[in-house]
Amino acid sequence: MKEGSKATPLNLCPYCTAAFDTFEELKTHVVSVHKTEPLPKPAGWIALTVNGQVHELKVEPEWTLYQVIHDRLGLMGVKMFCDRGACGSCTVIMDGRPILACMSLAIECDGKHIQTAEGIAEAKHPLVESYIKHHTMQCGYCTPGFITTAKALLDRNPDPTVEEVMEALGGNLCRCGTYPQHPKAVLEAAQTLREEGSK
Image (tube, rainbow, N blue to C red; front, top):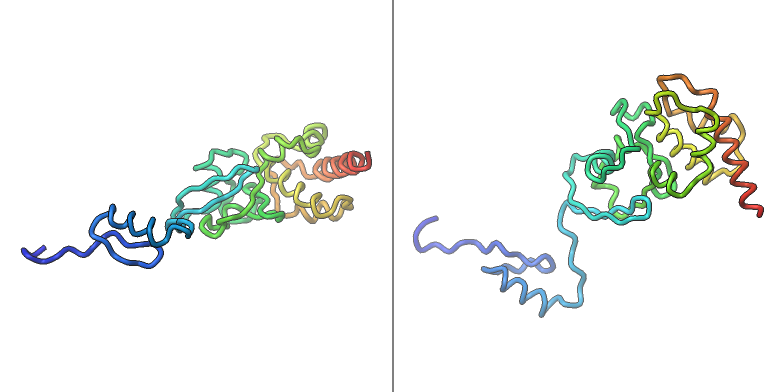
């Protein structure tokens, strides 16, 4: 910087973009002028409600929802198999719909409600017990994605046919080949839910 030149103020008001030489001046301005306005969310910050718990965190523009849920929040039920949106192992439920977390940018999920296999298990959904009973897993890697997809199906269709179950789970791959067991488990869970609802 040349001698005698004045530095450009670095403290900009997030509301009106007024510039201040010091942070203290900025704080005084915000409190006195904008005291009734909510503090704006900093760039890159999102809020997610995951399994009923709110998480506020800074994300990079290229981060996927999978990276946030698995790597930042530590929920291991969201798996990475293909990283191409072709296997269903990273499936989560977002605002009632099953989505592929590896194909969703986290920055676009601000304010969303997300449910993972962990949340489904914590809620003691009958799918978990029926999946165990019908031996729908061998290695178990794909199981959380199947359960999450099945839960989304039963939420919107409590009495599905075998064909509807197979269609809903058509995007989930299992390298162990447990496909025949999944419709049995889902239909039994559906029946359990209907019986519980009629009590």
